[in-house]
Length: 254
Image 1 (cartoon, rainbow, N blue to C red):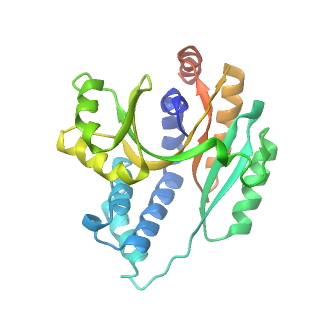
Image 2: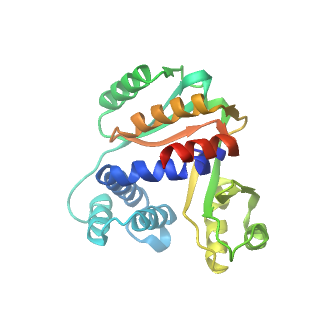
C-alpha cells in the first residue's frame, strides 16, 4: 500500500502480519530468492538482496532460513527457482485504484486467485494500462517517528542523496526518491544513524482519493483477502485516509 494509507493502517496491518506469520515469512523468503537469482549472493554488490534480507530480519525470519534462501536463489545449493512478476490492475469499492503485484511460479493460479478474490470482495478487474497510468515508480523509504529524530534531521541526511521530498504521514515519514537514488538515500540515512523500516521501489499514486470510514473498511477487507494469496507480494492503491478516519479505524482495531 502507498501514500497516507500506509500509516493509517499500520496497526491494522500489524495485526494481520502477526496472525499470518508463516505466509509473511514465505513471501519474504521468495523476495530473497529472486534478488539472489538476479544479482547474486553477495549483499555488498546486490542492494536489492541487502534490502530483502534486512526486511526479513526485521520481521524475525530465522537466519538459517535467510541463508538457505540466498543459496537457493543464487543456485549455490543446486536447487532452481522460477518466479514471474505479474501486475494485475483493478478497482476496489467506490473506484479506489489497485495495482496487485504477484510473484508466482504458476501464472494461471495467480490470475484465478486474484480474479476470484476481487469479485468476492467488491472489486473489479481492469484492462492493462487503465489503472497503471495513475501511478509512477518511486523509491520509498519508510521511517517510524521517534522523539530523537525530527523531519529536519531526515531532510539534512538525504538532501544531497537524491531525495525528492520527505512526507509526514502522521505515524512516520516517507522519503521519496527516484528509483535510481534509492540506495544512495538509504545509505545516507544509515550514515546519519537514522533507522528506517523499509526502502523499496513502489508504485506511488499521482492522484489520491480520500475515503470515508465505510469505503476504507471495504478496501482494507479486500486488501486483506488479496494478501491471503501466497502469490500476491505487494498491493498499491491511491486511497487517502484522513486522520479522523484513521482514528476511527484504530479504535475499531482495539
